[in-house]
Length: 244
Length: 390
Image 1 (cartoon, each protein chain N blue to C red):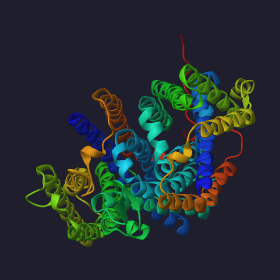
Image 2 (cartoon, rainbow over the protein chains, first blue to last red):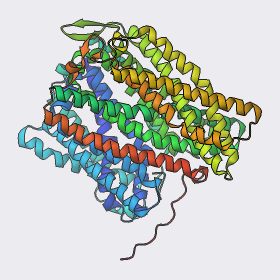
Image 3 (cartoon, rainbow over the protein chains, first blue to last red):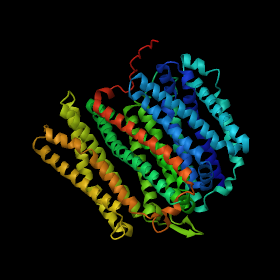
Image 4 (cartoon, rainbow over the protein chains, first blue to last red):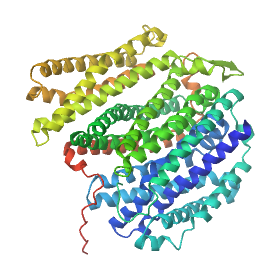
């Protein structure tokens, strides 16, 4: 049961970093990939249909932590409280910018929302690095890892755009990004963080662990099914602005 | 320490309170949108398809704030309420984990498919998607009310070494203070959405535009929803008094909790009066609604919100001084924070929420005011932006 719980934690951490992290990366590179408001809206259309399906991985991760790894929740949230406050604040600013951008057709409004998306994405990526950095390396190494991790997410976002965009934004993203490489790197981050944490000490007590783990395992095919349906439905490359 | 408890409580109350208000409309409106889309799909009615697009657009704008406030709330347990998790996460964490995996994850994935899937799926598949969203939204509300119900009346656990351990999952999931509150909130949410639809429709009918038929339907659907939800909401609320804690009764009840109870009942009575007025008018002259009635309906829009939030104040403030009734005091549930740490989180999130909530309400009302024509082509290419000249 403990092994299964660890595998599920790793799976949802990896999913959050790869999918939600990719959206952060695209937001970070928005001013470089899209030079005009319409181009920027096209770049956002690349993540648009996946954005909700990607963000839920973070929420699911929170649920698994609170249910199956209360010690980890304590370690990450209470010990690195400031970084977490920054992560959440930046994250919701990015979300609001993304959802609001196309609600009003006025240039200053779009520019302000672009600002929220870019600042929020950088803030969230750096804060996520600050949460993970000390796990991966102690002392000064941990501090230095935060910007490196943010950079990795930016490259990952470029890799995603390389698979999704067309035209000039694609030409700008293509030299920067290799989605497979950055995905593997994020997988390595997940495994390294897992190995450095004493996760067995952070597990919930057996009765709770059993309920949560079995439930997640049973639901997993349904969750993955919904995710695959989303990827399949919106598999075509983006050529112009979308809903967001 | 005392000051940090108040600050953490106030921050949580503002987060959870705003989450609750947005989610209430989400939960009710998704039901109405799913029903409208069912009718549009079965009858091929263009009018109903337009109604789905307009009210669905409002639903999506509102949904976003539910996610944003919910995300912060979920993590606030870890940052501000570590005492609660240390003592009770073995029980309290279970429905929360089940909610994220078994409800919210699927709800949000399928909402993405529904929003971006217009025209990409067959009408029936697209209809199925909104029903998946609606049903998982109910499941989500169920798990959250089970979590909250456990804080009101802890069951299904044993205390070992100062920690609550899960002993009976069935008892936890069928806790009457959770189940009854779920029914109460579900119908209160429908009532909120119904009055929201009626009030927006009344605004447009009052202006007498080309969309009168569209909004006559909206007024009728909204008011019918209110009429059908009033009694179930009151009944599910009323039977909960069998499980009332002593802290919600005289002489222990706090003035704030008592004021919440009174305001909730008063709002409910005013809504009942309005809906009966509608019923009488509808029976005599179903196609004509006078100026006074329309203005009153518009003015009634805050009432369900007032009822929701004051009922929530009664339930949650009335639970004090307990975080988990009889088991864990609020002062022991809070994280060991310094004053600076407590202020940092408060100072970041409270102003941020104030801005986000205000702007989002403004966008919601702006979209509502503009009427269905702007929602008819949700994926239209944006108008070409003027070329800047320097």
